[in-house]
Amino acid sequence: MIQKKWLSDFQLKWDRMKQAMMKIEADGCLLSVDVNLYYLTGRVYNGFFYMPAEGDPWFFVKRPAGINCDHVEYIHKPEQMAELFANNGLKMPRKLLLEADELSYNEYMRLLAVFNPELTGNATALMRNLREIKTPHEIEMFRTSARLHEKTYAEIPDCFHYGMTDRELQYEIEKRMRKNGSIGLVRAFGDNMDIFMGSILAGDNAAQPSPFDYALGGGGTDALSPVGANGTVLKKGMAIMIDMAGNYTAYMTDMTRTYSVGTLPQAAYRAHQTSILIQSEIEKKARPGVACADLYKIAANIADQEGLSPYFMGLSQQAKFIGHGIGIQINELPVLTPKSKEKLQTGMVFALEPKFVVPGTGAVGIENSFLVTETGIEKLTLFKEEIIKL
Image 1: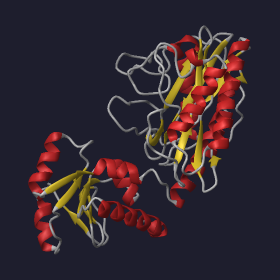
Image 2 (image 1 turned 135 degrees about the vertical axis):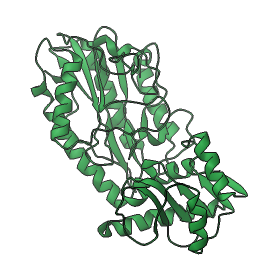
Image 3 (image 1 turned 180 degrees about the horizontal axis):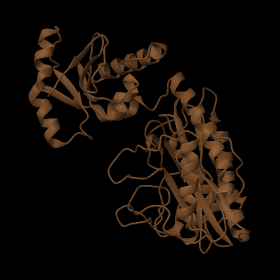
């Protein structure tokens, strides 16, 4: 089940999990959501991961066949776990944590009937908080993703030709992403957060509001997925914002760069430089203990001072965040919002994305992934940040 070379990394995660359970007096945690299974075992399987307050974790597996290690039990249905608990000397938990924000109502009630705990708690919140602080192995996977993310972005000029649409450009970029090792699937937390490999926003499509909770929207290719490229023909004087996922390992980097068809109006270059200025000022101030809300305020204040507030993070619909945690999912904790109560902690990895929409031209700005270190933040995605002329 667990690769031996990463056993110490998983042991660290398990220890952190037990400490978090102890704080809320939970004596059992049952997980079945893919991202949590991967986080704690290094693989996705159909079944359950059970962590008792004391002792080693147990793995109750439906599929695939052939997993052989200590504490693996094969089951056909959840009800079998009660019998296996009794057979293996495991105590039924008095307070059981379940992924309450992600399980269906029927599955949640079925598991309650299996375990019949006196108390329950929300494992979704516990796991999202745990996943905020990355382990050494996770950080190395971010670095690997970053290098391949940069490689793909360097190839984008070769994808472009005059007269193509934004969708045609995206197809060419996606091809290079896959050749460079992209997993393809972009995992996100929450409802209505579907996206396919990333987003391209060309010209005024960047101003189109979306029902999804993204920094910028776009009309999309169909009403079923109203976000991103919409078939806009790429013309001179148009900005193209490219925000394709860095999922070259299970741990995704997030990076946005702005390209242009020919030369843009001066207002676009000024707004873009303001985005770079915001990043620079946040890099100076960000360190463990700094409030996420304060980082948002730095960005908003600079946008206001430059007279760009009406264009900051959208036009008719403006996003109220300038950054978010990243990891196995593209939208992890923390979130850099004006109302956030969180503070930066060593080991967090987040994306910072100050962006502007210039009417008649399109979106400009940058996004980079940062690791919070003991003394500040380290930029993980290293690629030229000026507007790149196609």
